[in-house]
Image 1: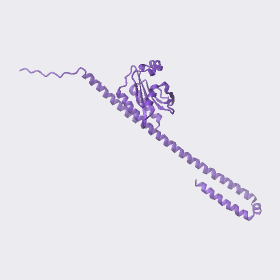
Image 2: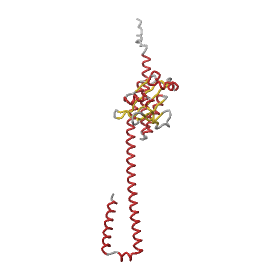
Image 3: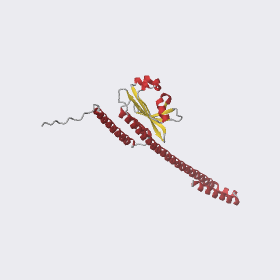
Image 4: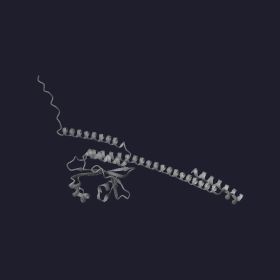
Amino acid sequence: MTTTAPSPPPTHPDAASLLAGRIVELERERDRLITIIDILSEISGTLHFVDILQTIARRLGETFGLDRSSIFLADSGGRTVRLVASYEDPSIRNLVVDLARYPEIQRAMDSGETVFIADVTADISLQHVWDALERRKVKSITVVPIKYRGAAIGCIFLRTFKDGEPLSEGDIRFTQTVADLTAKSLRNAHRYESLIKRTRGVETDAEAAHRADVQRVALVAYLQKLLEAFAQHDRAAIEQLLPNASAVELQRLVGVTMAVLAEEAKG
């Protein structure tokens, strides 16, 4: 009797492509986790917010191969923001930007929600910069707000090339995680810099008090030397001219003065 080997189960024509896509996504997820670890490692060595933000902008630009990766912080009044870190030009540190030129940033800051523009040439709000975006071969824009206590205090701004890899939903979620990390880092940096300022203020007050003490001692020493010199020069004449009652009163006044100086010295 001849037996026939069972035929393999039918394979769905899309199964291989689905599996390949899943593998690619897992690899990207691994790369995102590595990037988070790298960012944490780099920013742990500083508490200066400018260095922290520049590190984050650079790492995002390198990870996604972006045309632009920038971080803006809110300005007072709500009409401007400050460009404080830039992947494409690290020398930019505090550039005031009018939000009227960046409606996508305005939307993200006002709503506190991520703004994703998949195709910049299809967004009518960007019509005034279509030519510039076309020259730069920009494909998409993503603006992720940086929030503290529910309010947007800044944003992460990302632009992709037309020929580059588009940002996936996972990439956007990753950027939102980085934005949360940025907010926490800014809070810690702000606390550190506030502490430094307070410490410097205490030192300044102490130095000022010390200078005042030195000046007071110098003034008293000068007056003492002056009086001693004058008394030695004409002591006999002073004793003859000064009545006993006046001498006693002057002695009392000297005692009062010394008591006041002693109290002043205590601060």
